[in-house]
Image (cartoon, rainbow, N blue to C red):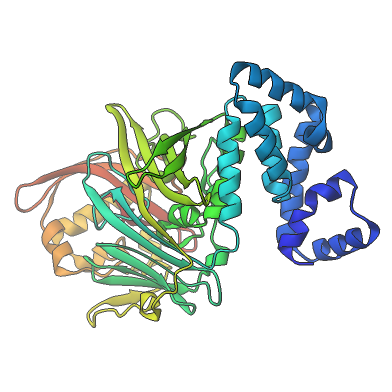
Length: 462
């Protein structure tokens, strides 16, 4: 028995309807498969929630409670009963996880419409067994900003993702100012303006987090193990997991999910599912609405009515000035055969390649145990003196002429008291400086602490 067959039988196992042979095969596979064990745990919790509401999953399929609800909704909206009945029967046959999401929607959450849950469930089934996906996107962010950064006042810049699951599970994510490539042997992040690259061991597509792992939702953010802040893009690219996870998040966090149909310019119809998502951060948190993962958003998923496949995604930021489109998947291509050159990255000869661990100059004795404020001030003081050796004690990347021209000879106006965010593992230090050319810059320096040495280093904010 493989994972797909095992997970399709999870609901039947919970209801005790597997015959002895099937039960033995099921248990043998489950004993050695952590992924299916995790799915069983998740399914069991949802099953218990259904029981707590007075119905078991088996009763939901045929029992009077759901049919009574269908009849009541039919009285309100004449077409609802037939639609509910159709996708309810379909959901029970397309896999345990999807079926329980649909059943939980009916019993637990009035904030998810039946039609929306049905469309998402159909999208899950349409996305199974994909070999590759190619996303063409645009995001409001500067071309050289990190992949997770968003800014409603920025112009759109392009982002493109290629990802395959077979073989080595290679992937590539690119925007004008930076590119990350996993070629099966290593993962390389090239920062074009800085002429710098970071090289890590390979991080296969199958080991990257799903949308559920990246959600803040008032919970502690997990350590980001998708390299270089690309996790949210991988979550979108993992279409099957994303479409399965979103209804779970709606249920868990009290978000709203609705559906409508629209006519396309080609004369076809598509189902449009909208999810209103909160950021999960405390009110006034510095990073609220600055990163994709920490934004209060309206997420719009568009599905082809004929195939059920996801066709596009739009994300609108709930900004003080009104909703702003900040991200859009403009094209999705399924099961393409990629040119091998997509996963090859040739770096210019003058690019310095380093490992993930920050390479900080200077001795630990005189640079460890500083406060974030002291580290920020010493960094700026070194820039003012143009002491680039001392600057390198706080700046982990190579120093090029552009960096030296920008910060060399600056004047410190102020360095404030550090603060933190629930979504960042370091500290932010407010500062104001005057550059040699007279320009003033007022922002927040992001500092992280190297746990091995106890030293603070600059992580961004310049």
